[in-house]
Length: 74
Image (cartoon, rainbow, N blue to C red; front, side, top):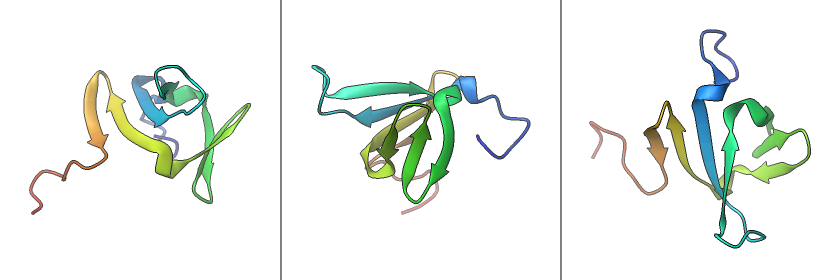
């Protein structure tokens, strides 16, 4: 997403655990992410540990979800 010039970051939505919100989750749009460094998603106003990421969607489809095995792997 950040390294492929053909990818549009705005197509991505990342869901993270957020203990400060009433729902316990926060939705981050891909174009909010400035960088990924040392295990953190770097936003313009925060750094979020990647271990809090629970799901990644692209174009409305889930492409990764914590606890879900990749297709073709056992």
